[in-house]
Image (cartoon, rainbow, N blue to C red; front, side, top):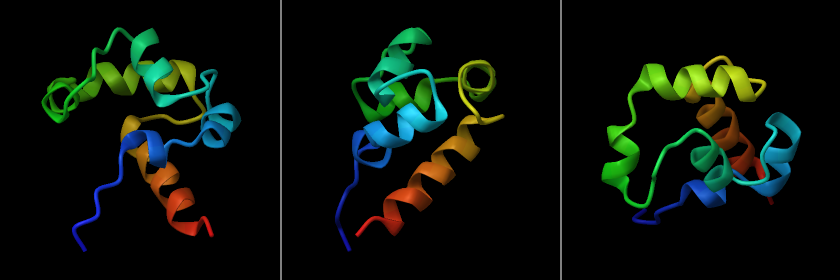
Length: 78
């Protein structure tokens, strides 16, 4: 394996427009006040904080459900 997929690749513009009020995952993070430039930044976001933001601004109740759906969609792409 060894291939790394970025959040920007998983959260396509189409996905973001369909399920959120944002055009990119970066825009979602920015609007939520999450400064994510490294994996450590991402890991440091409290689950409750991002879950509450996702529940209020997307069609998903939690970040984990949003991430799972985006990953599933990404894996189905041709």
